[in-house]
Length: 407
Image (cartoon, rainbow, N blue to C red):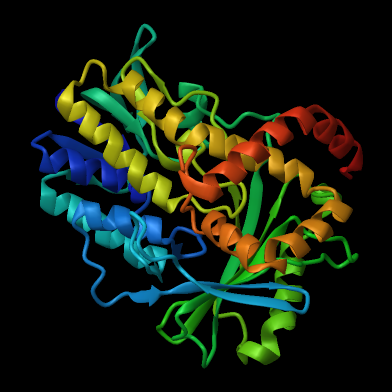
């Protein structure tokens, strides 16, 4: 049997970040990825300034990638074009980095750091009592002091570990494709916040145009499960509607590939247990207010690696505690907020507030850019803490009334 200090299940940003940080610190690491090298992960491809900060911390160069300097928010006739803030702990730029290229780059960095790569290898956790001791792959076994689940929320690994999403909490769905556009090299992301479905129902989500700088734009739409009519929502039709809406302004060509959809888990029943932890999407670390999670994936991967290097025995519990302190309050506020905007009248009023003034637009920018944590100082942090208390009081009512509004 082969033994490693850390075994990582999944070769996306969360798994690669874990491996890079741990291997650089001297730990022996193996990554098991069930897909082949160069697999394409369906995604919006947008990287926030927070994500760029995490990549910098990992030592990943941003040379040659398409940088993004702000966000254009559209709600009806109102447009706000805002630059990412300067002077914060994060860089003042984001990027659009196509996931196929980003993931391959991170995996290569993990390999160069010393991690052992296994592609086309579906790893399944193995147990000794209630403790995870390693993984099995096609009848072969490996042991580890720590197994890191970086394979997302759905699937066999999540079911075996008990880390699936909480079924009574909101989740998101999204769809994306690529189109050619002469505006492919713009340096702003664009988010259309006032989307409607084919029946005219307001969408608690947004449509996006993320210019990739390579002749193409990532075009997509996303929605929250709290919206009225969610169960009958046709994502392909919604994508077509959005393409038609932006077609003239962006001068888009036909779809370059068939639109692909995916789910966005926003909770996890457990983040750790004896011998294992979950990182990134597998830990439910996705912002309910924008569907973004790459930055949290990178940060959570680096965190567990650092804690393991300090003390392998206490790392899982410390990880769960720190992740909870850093993200739980903010993500809980986002989930509660998703119930609020699931009501069409509230959504319409909220959009007017979100982009109606410079102050609120700046706050919306920070939320959409994942620039706020539970411990965020200053006005933005205060607004969110007050909002969390108000939404906590209204949460039972919002949940009960929203359940009646679903079809």
